[in-house]
Amino acid sequence: MVRRTLLIAAISVLGLGVLAASFHSRSSVEKHLAQQIHLARQEAAVFSAQAPHFSERAVPSGLNITDFLQGLGVARAAVLAVVDAARPVYDLARIRAGNQMVIARTVAGELLSLRYQIDPDRMLWVSSRGSEFRAEIKEIPSTTATVRIHGEIRDSLFNAVEDAGERAELAIRLSEIFGWDLDFYTDPRKGDTFRVIVEKKTYSNGQPASYGKLYAAEYNNDGTPYQAVLFRDPDGRAAYYAPDGKSLQKAFLRSPLKFSAPITSHFSKSRFHPILKIRRPHLGIDYAAPVGAPVQSIGDGRVVFAGRKGGAGNMVHIKHTNGYETMYMHLSRILARSGAHVGQGERIGLVGSTGLATGPHLDFRILQHGAYRNFESLRLPPANPVAKRDMAEFIATRDRFLPLLTADPSQLARATAPLTSVPAGR
Image (cartoon, rainbow, N blue to C red; front, side, top):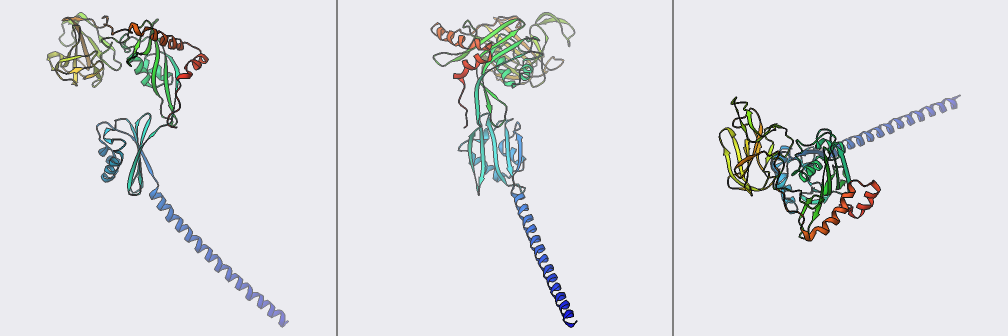
């Protein structure tokens, strides 16, 4: 009985010891675990403070690189360091409004890196390496292929190009090629069609495609086809020509405005003036356009007057060759100066409503040997055709590209295979 009692007591003492040891062990584990959690939280806080926080912005108009980056919270000292680091490869004073810039910073605001898209093909990278910044320009990987793009007009060329899944840049290119024969603000009709053979560059980073050489184009306007072929002569001069070798370029553009604007008043010998309330000649064309729309010179020439003149308001008067003169009236702002030479397509002012005007518009006038002419019906003087010595080479170029406008896909692939570029940036 005594032995049994002693045995029970011994077991009890042993159990209490094991239990105490167990509690001690659990307490140590919990303490160790708590320490590990605390350390992990500290490391996470440090990592979070150092982890990059990205900001992406399009460069706004009118800001230099210093003001732009400081506006995003970058310290002035860091801005100057980035500019200095980039200078050997790219001058950040040349940043262009609308281009994208991405900056990475810590939570504390320390600048880690900067990426600026110089153009569709190149990116400037500036990144911190310890206490300094290093800069390099990287090619954006891309692939170029010669493709055919076509579409049909519903309301405008720009919308038709977008409906075809392409960028507005292509519509601008087409309007420039045929701009001497067609006014793409007034001439397009529903059902018109276009086709182009063009180099199209696609990028691995998913940015919008860009376009290279446009080899051939066709625009069918209300049943009348207009065709163009790119030809480079032996001297290296490139221009677009009609299939017969005549230059598509004329001495004058077909419109003094770069963007869409309907004609609200035509050339007339007797028009009721909306302000003066009398009938009198209207010796020009009124284009309705918003204030600030760019106005371009329709041809090369010399500015003989740039200033304010009575009912014409702010105006620019240009003398061209062969006795032609043009006037651009009611401008909100004049961008040319008297005595200056301007080129075809050069911006000379902005649309406004100065002078006798009921609202913003451009009153455009053209004179030939001192007499006002109706610009809408005027036959524009052409530029030089393909030289006789180059005609055989031109015909070979024409016969290579024009058939591709209507070729089936397999023919197109075979014909353009030699033109397809090697992938870039790889």
